[in-house]
Every structure is written in C-alpha cells, then in structure tokens.
Image (cartoon, rainbow, N blue to C red):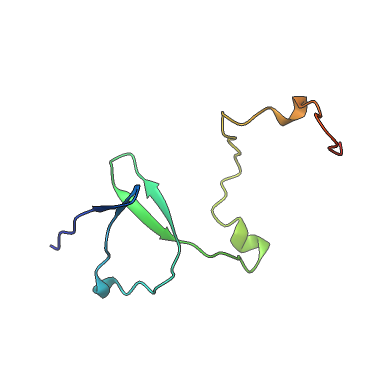
Length: 82
C-alpha cells in the first residue's frame, strides 16, 4: 500500500498522484465526496462529441440548487429582453 499526504498550496489542498497511475498532464477531473468519505476523481471531457455522450449519466431527474432564485418570478431591472 502506498500512502500519500495532502499539502496546502494557497487556499487549496493538493495531492500528488503517483506516476504508476499514468495520468496525463492536463487531464481534467470532477471531484466527488462519497457518503463514506471516499474521494473520487472522475476524468471529464471538456467537449462531448454528441448529445448522447453529454447526457450519458443523466438519471431523468432535475434537482435545482435550492439557493438559486425562482427564475419565473424575476422582475426586470434594466433592459433585459423578456
């Protein structure tokens, strides 16, 4: 078993991935914290090549962020096009 330690860099915590994982420089990841405390780094693609790829993990349910405004009840305050 290999143990690695997190270290502080600016306002972030950094973890160095060992070379045997063969992660290419510039690879983007989506970080996820699982309920059991496990941290997952899921590789992402910046530009999906199709709509099927874009929605491949969509489960058919939309859960908006509760802190977002109710966009149906916004009153224009300037020159917005409604």
